Amino acid sequence: MKLKLQLVQDGEIIFEIPLSPTDWSKKQLENEFDALEEKFHRISKIFDVLSNETRLRMMRRLMEQKDRTMSFADFMRDLDLNPKIVWENSRKLSDEGFLTKTGRGKYSCSEFGETAFMTMSLALRHLMEFLEKMENF
Image 1 (tube, rainbow, N blue to C red):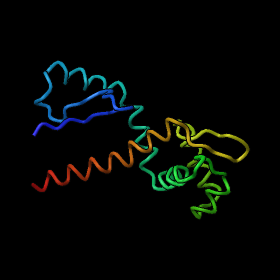
Image 2 (image 1 turned 90 degrees about the horizontal axis):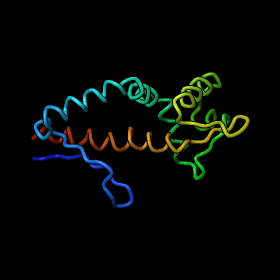
Image 3 (image 1 turned 90 degrees about the vertical axis):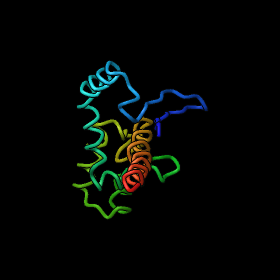
Image 4 (image 1 turned 135 degrees about the vertical axis):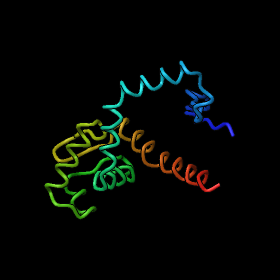
């Protein structure tokens, strides 16, 4: 089975990645692994941001809002969080580019934040389910 991962935008394939190492030349694999090592710090920060349940819940709530905006007080009320927890986690989300501060105590989900959240949470979940099915064959 030749599996490939595709990223499609407006019906056009932006890139396609074979998911089996046998479908790559040795040089292509080396180049990909080198690129991964170069980006490791940034990738690990994104995983770190979304590997925290509170930040994941905060991002979910933001994504559920029509304008992708919430106030500090909304986070406290909707997620039953204390101010220190909201402050620490909103700062971490902001530092990594997921949130932008739009006013006093107001946060908006950045375009990067929306895409990264959807990719790292929903798409990754579906990929994991597929891998688990493969494992059981």
